[in-house]
Image (cartoon, rainbow, N blue to C red; front, side, top):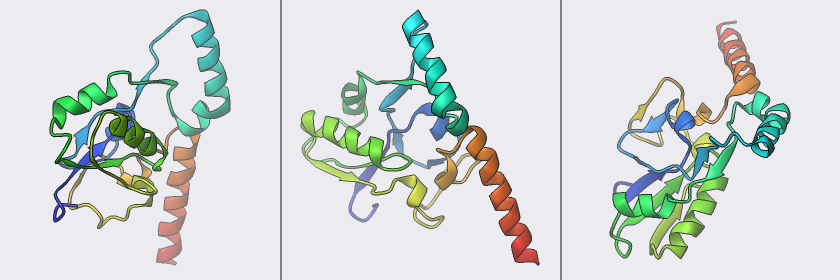
Length: 158
């Protein structure tokens, strides 16, 4: 990444980035927490929480309508800047790549599989309390992950 001159653009929402992020990466979230409290949105949030939010810990989100404009503020050179776009699993970053391409960025790359598929040695420095690979995991599934990590540690000691 550094040898080729790529800028790492982390497009994950704030709550994932706070858990772990690559030092020196730029951050512009593609999705933002939905702050609308209208009756229809509250119903959607309730359904989201029941079906996936409790399990994953993910908030109900909306697309960041200012995404490309915010990237332009941080990376103004659309013709020459090499931008490696990354998220947790690689799906949101594909959407971000599409939006940036429409915004006339020329040199775009995608971190296939996202940070979840990275290893500890893929990035020189990581900040935050969690491992980069686990930053997207939240809710009930986070506690299952902690149990698995504990069981692995106990298994190695045996």
